[in-house]
Image 1: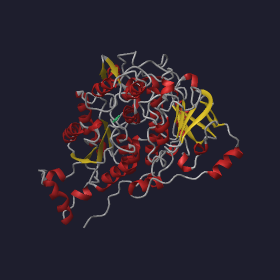
Image 2: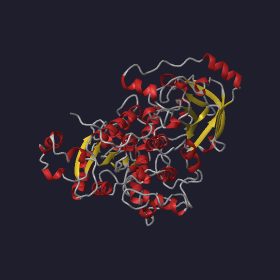
Image 3: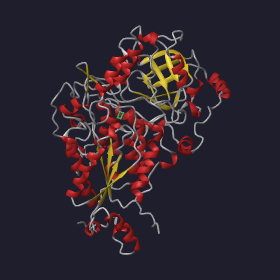
Length: 574
Ligand code: FES
C-alpha cells in the first residue's frame, strides 16, 4: 500500500508478544491479518452524544468517513472523545473546552493512529478537537456536522439563539404568550445539525474551511443534505492520501491560514468566540496569533453575508447561495487572502475557490456592495482593559459606537438576575451596564452572559440596545453594543473589578478606546481596598482550570497546554 514508515507500525508490525496483543484484540471484530500490514490507520474522532443534540447524527457521518477510508485502502478506527453540548453543560461548555482538548490530544498520541478525521459541530467541539489535534500534529482533516435546516415559526424564518433572545425579551415584556413561546421551541430546531444562524458553530465551521483543514464547501452544507455525507466520504479518502504524503496539520495551519481565517470571519460577520478559539488553536500549533492580529487584519474587511444574528437569512440560504467559497473568492479578488495557503485537498485556497459562483446575491453580497462595511472585530484598550477587550461593531448599534455613560454595576451574574427586573433600578438608555466576575477564572469558564438582558422598563419603552461591558463572552447568535473579553478579568484583579456605580465610562470604537473616567489615585485607593472573590476551584478539573487558565487575550487555554508535544510513539504497556 505505502512505502513510507507508518506510525502505526510501532504497534502492528511487531512480530512478538506485544504485536500479538495489538493485533489479536482487534481481530475479534473480523479484521484479517492483511489489515495490519502497511495500511494507514485513520482515527475517526467522534463527538457524538445524546447530550450534544447538535452532534446527534455523527454516527452516520462517521460511517461515511469510514467508507471513504476503506475506499482508499486505509484502516478506519472510530473513537469517542468528550463531547460538549452547548445547551446542556453547566456552568458553561467553555469550562470544558480545554479538558476535551486534552482528551483528544492524549487519545490520538497514545493510539496507533497515522491520521485523524475530526467530527465537530456544536460550538466548543470544533476548537477542542482542533486544539488537541494541533498538539499532536499528525495528518488531520476536519469534517463539520453541518447546520440545521432553517427554523420556521408562523410562516416566518427563525434562527437558533437569535430568536430565543428576542422571543424571551418579548415574553418578559408581555408581547407573546407562554404557549407561543413553547411552540416556537419545536419550530426553531426541526432537524439534525448545529445552530443555523452565524453563531459560534457556523462560524467555527467556516473557520475550519478557511483554515484549509476542512474540504471545500465544508461549512454550509446542511446536516441532513446528502452532500454532507459525500464530503465526509471524500474526507475519508483524502486523509489516507495525506498520510501517504506525510502532510502534517502544521503544514496546513500556518500563520497565513490563520490570517485568512481572521479575514473570512469579518467577511461572514462571524462570532466573537472565534477570537479566543483561533488564538488558542494557533498557539497549540506554534503560531503566535494575538488580539492585535485580529484588529489589524479585520480593518477594511466588509461583511458580505446577510445572515442572522446581524441579518435576515440562515445557513441553509447561505448554502444555496454558494456558501463560503463565494466569500473566499470575493476576499481573494480584493487582495485580502493568502491565496497560496495549502488546504487538505492538496490544492491552495485560491485554487479551490477561484471559480465559486453566487446563486443568491441578496444572501451573499459582493465586496463592492457589501451587507455591512468594516465588520472586523475591533480590539479596545484603555485603563479599563489594559490587555484588551473586543466588540463586534457589525452587531452593535451605530449610535452607541462612540458613547460616554454612567456605569450601572452588577457584581455577579446572580446580582444581575436579582435586580434586572426591578422597576426601581436606576438606569436609562444612556447608562453603561457593567458585569463583573464572569471571565475565565471568575465564572469559572467565561460564560456567554456578556449580552446582558435589558431591564423591562427600557424594553417597554422600545429601547433594544444600550452599552454593556463585561469580562464574559457572548453567544455568537447574540447582538448588541456589547464589549466582551475584558482583560485582565475582574477575578484576576483587572480594572473592571474597580468600577463603581456612577463612574463615567467612555467607549470609542473608532479610536479603539475603553476608558473609565476616574483618576489614577482613586483607582489605586480602590485597588488597595479590593479583595479577590473566593475561588470556585476546590478540587478536580475545576481547580486545575482555575489555577492554570490564561486570560481571554491569550486564548483562555491552560498555561501548560500551549504548544505541541508531538506524535512520538509512547513506550509499551508491558
Ligand atoms: Fe450546539 Fe448552538 S447549541 S451549535
